Image 1 (cartoon, protein in one colour):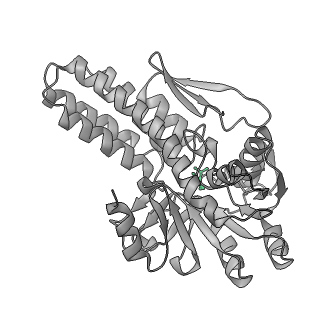
Image 2: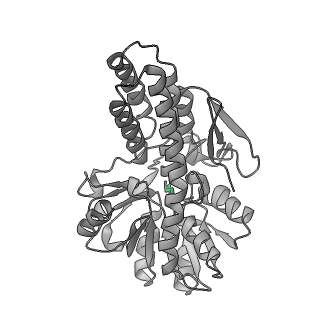
Length: 346
Ligand code: MRU
């Protein structure tokens, strides 16, 4: 199994996703600041993986706090968390993980400081383990929507690399394969950061799951030809009404799916639901550097001085979403009710 992120001997070790697939190298983070930098520079990316990294980062930060009482400890911890929380804005799993770690500290305020630090480390490890089992449960639900022989189109990378393991959208693919179904994947390359070409293609190939790489602009061609049975993508944040923020280009895929009567599914853990937002309009969209658009593999492809836009995510409105697959079950429209029910489900 691909080890996206681990926490061993006071070091958070991540596979460097900026170097895949040509090089499989690891980055060791020894401080919360290094974890924040790894998130910002996309050494680690994908909403659930960002959440796991953040939890481990909080634990690394806590270990450095020299305080003799809880109030002083927590004040410093909050300052560290505020900084880490600014590393990327769209994936809600970042603040979800930070808030969970802060709550753990509050609940353990009566412990000694060394015990509190140990408790935070234990929680970070739990978040990692839980993420893998959540993805497996999501896969079990999701695979009921997949038939033997289906071709699944996906956008970006919502796989083992975007999580602690198994994946969300690719977790549905893996669970379908594990259930004995013959599945093929069509992977959009996902310009400009190429998560599809570099990461989805790599991890599916590693697992011997049949995958064909296409450029983003080809997906409508294959949908119209009847060569796509369903779409499964991940999400960075889902608003209370079921609007979905995911990698730039997802909206285009969803519109094409609707036009061609192809089901469009979103696979995401409950930690990606943000019911505090009533619609996708309220989700902050990260604007990334122009360098990622005008260069491919450090090779300039556009004229110097050209004006560039680079929104890293878009919003797919709920009317284009057939269903949302979570670890607690599958939600369908009207999402305002079904998502609330999913969150409250034991
Ligand atoms: O910019 P990225 O690579 O972090 O964007 C990732 C995505 O958009 C994924 O689809 C999403 O985080 C879901 S990952 C299970």
